[in-house]
Image (cartoon, rainbow over all chains, first blue to last red; front, side, top):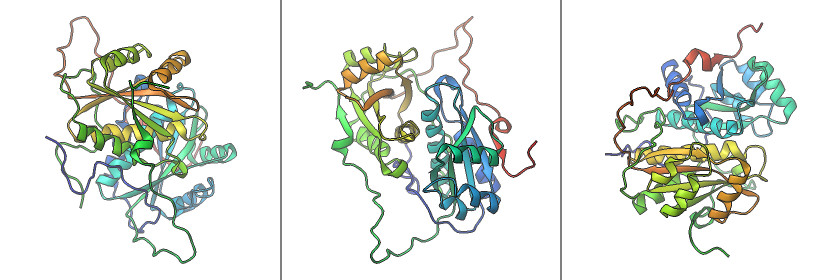
Length: 180
Length: 180
């Protein structure tokens, strides 16, 4: 028995960068956060904390803390991801797992998402102050969540953003073949 | 419209550490790998490569390259995850996203999965040699994939592995409240 749901393909959801104003329903948010909370982690360390930003002013500040973070201002809700950088070498990998679990659940509930990286370090510090996060917790990423707005028509003269993927043969190899 | 499929809950799949011998079907593997390949990454860098290990001898070697990697030997198939460590500070986070996308797709197709961390560095080097991966590619993780075997009955005198999660209030906070 497996999932054949037509609204939830096996491939992960594509990024959504334009959002409607419609808020994220509280019970949906709870389910989205629970999906992240139940992600696996090395030795079950759960090296993540999730910070919910609803306030437009705070989201606007976050949106200035990364070079590609503008969409944090226009989404109705942002989930900041804080990582415990004292928890070992798997911390970023594990927070990536939680992020993907959050975004997958949001997609299954009909929401679009797009993560942003907060950088450089001064901006990570600033984001931590906005979130009330103290070391070893570092808020390095934030995820915009909301209902997707219709895509804009392509603008003349502006190249489309490269959103494809490397071909399968470039990404996957079989082990155990003769190695040169 | 959203996914209400009973076999694919919003929460991410739990780890499977015991497997049946039944092989992973080739077309299922292709769909699982494609789910990882279509994960998002910072600036679409795709800092991952997936190495498929079917050979029992190679899987047995991998299973000795981490303190908690034994399940790599008993699964019918292992996907090694190589990360481009020259690709920037989001590399581990992004490979975590791809890992979770792979495991979510595998779960939707009825397979169990469990990642393992390969360490210390000498073992990462050894795994790279098994995979044919050269720097900057480092094979730091591997995911066991297969049909789940029935769980063993709890053994008297052996404490159950802690598999719960921190309570919601410990993991989630609202931003914008007065900070002390």
